[in-house]
Image (cartoon, rainbow, N blue to C red):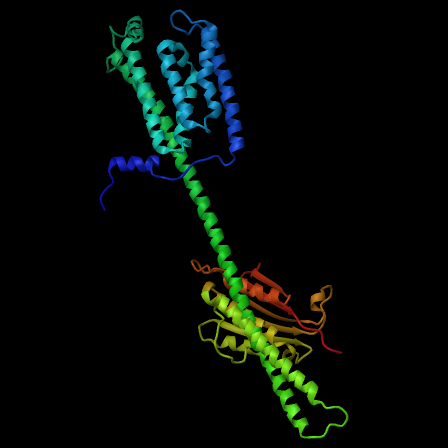
Length: 461
């Protein structure tokens, strides 16, 4: 790869082709502070001029005081809009420097106005939105400043008189000629002054651009994470709808078949008082109609979800797993020690868990185990299934008892294996579907826990 030319490096450093526009985070507050800063420096410039005049620092015959005050104030006042119009302020202030410096040089040499000139140049580089215009205006200002400096040294005899008065010409104290050293020192100070302001302004501009890029990246990541979460929720809801369809459709289909068989059997005998075939035929028609409508609804959902990946999609109609199938999750021979414990109160209550709830508990344990295998250093996992028909005090959701699965491991997060978190989103979606409770997170004593509790329906009396 060829090395970039110096002009390309400078163009990159000054951001000539960059589309970043630096603006204050709170423009109103920033512009208000600029007004106060400009007014404060104006007052200080006038006060500094009077102090210099009173101390006798002005050369030659002093100008009228009102003129000195006016010129000092005119040099500092444009800073009230320094960030609103940075290049216009730079051109105005440095035009003031050049014109006043050629006519009344005592004014521009005061300390406050020197600070003003530095701040104006820094602001133009740090806040200019048009970087190419900034280069033009700054270059013109530097040419004017160093041109003025050259003129002052060419026409002024102050350095010569100072060297003669101090006897430096007769007995030079250093390695360099006194007059040459004075000129070189003056140029060095001004070089550091002007280019220091430019460098500081450009570094500040780069810092602002970097912060803006990080903010934009954070916003993009947040938006993408929200979109991924939304897709995960939609995908999980589609999978829940399909599973609910399979469970309910199976039972409703059985109802339809049984009702049809009963009607045919009864049709062979004589009805005593009322023909039972009519309500049985209604049951048959209603069950088949319900199954047909559910299949149409789920078919619509599948069409909507065809664009995204659905990890739970399947074309078969095999029986869905339930609570009894959780023990099969421990059969995988992958070095992970998985133990399954079943607790039922009263004993034998597991078969009473509805198919939809049992499926959700199975999927929760399956997802939790998958997360342990992918993202944890755990060597052992305990799965506890609890089915309790006793009502839970102070919680109306669990008046009919609850079915619960808890997955606990003894590991910690594996470095460099953080997941997207979408599996946990799916677990929470399942819990919300059944109006249950989920507790997911690290344990105080180490390891990780996933616990899901779903309400059982009230037993019919």
